[in-house]
Length: 209
Image (tube, rainbow, N blue to C red):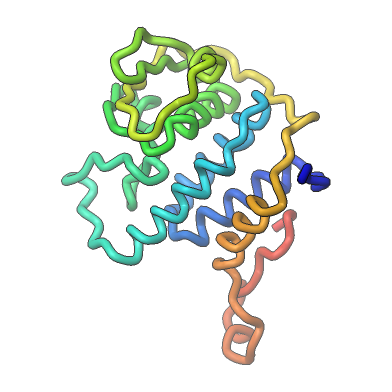
């Protein structure tokens, strides 16, 4: 059934951000993923299905794994995150050329696209040994991006930030939107006598927080 939802750009970004934080993704990476989601939407892409899959897998990992120290790991799997460190796009901006296996390649391209919008960082990507391409060129390819692709990212140049148009964004299915909200709701604390004593606990329930 066709969705009749109307989700604004602010609602999209806020809900993705809260869902990531509710899944224990480190705040800075959650911000990057929220920006990536908006960048993908602006290109007519659908970020929720791969993002929800990553959130489910990441939550399981966060609950069951002892995370390695930052200097021991280049694990860029679930949501492409070092659990206590930067997202992969930060490494590219620092001048590195990370190589990794991506659970959701489309999110990587969204990260790269978003950093171009915010900082003017122009990047190129190689997927499974392909020639270097711009992120939007990869997203425009007719072949779907497959999970567990081997990827490389590099800086091509630094230019002016590119305005992001969010006037006509794709809308989510009701089921995907409900699933996203379930993750987002995990950051909320019931307003009982205990939580009322902690300033700020339970806040963040509106898109303006």
